Image (cartoon, rainbow, N blue to C red; front, side):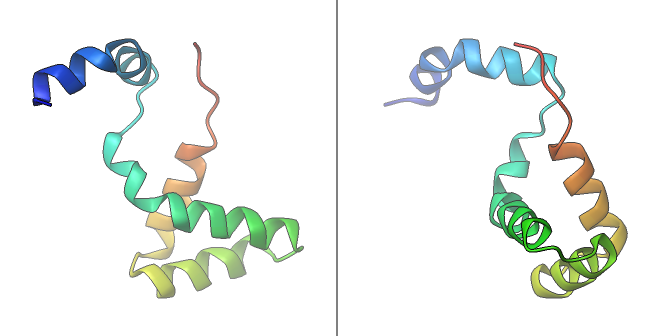
Length: 77
């Protein structure tokens, strides 16, 4: 498969992502977001979650907060 074929096969999804401002490289932080969701369900405080995940994944507190906020934005399909 070529890059062109990959883009064509996923064109609709990719256009929706672009229209909603989805940053494709955010796929690299999905594990961190899953962990944040689990910690939230377990009753952990937001500040603790941000501090813990920042240390674990090598991000600043502000970056973690920004990533978590951005990935919780609703999308229009």
